[in-house]
Image (cartoon, rainbow, N blue to C red; front, side):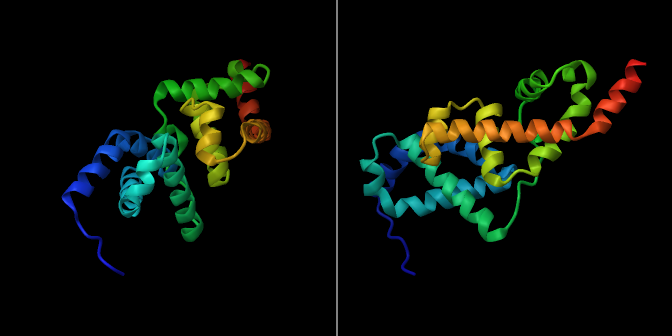
Length: 195
């Protein structure tokens, strides 16, 4: 493998293009990987991979979604090669206000759930259920329901039609609700608390 030649002018052009997007790339990588070290490695791998492709980067109109797309593909390739899943629960990667909003959205879909089950009891169950999703499904749910990405932005990053994003979000939510309702011990405990 040939070593990359270092050209100061080229390096400045690359940095000028990529630097404004590094923080957003890291946040996205953290959502995907679930750990700081893995997210840093993911961003670094992508940046190193893109450096030789400077002319292609310079021709991209909307660089941020394009970079996120490359980052996502690289992550999925890693997951498939290693056969691994995210190492951390959703409650560890989401801010507390995002967790509440995320949990409330599911609780609102199930009659009397929010009254029956406290958030503290619901969080570990949701973490477990979300961990059971495929990496693609988990990423979609984190981006849409936790981070609040629009369906259009997700469609652009994943390179799929908006309608496909809508149907996948709907199917993931339905699966999560079904799995949640399939945990009768949550509701039985709630009934005991009421009595």
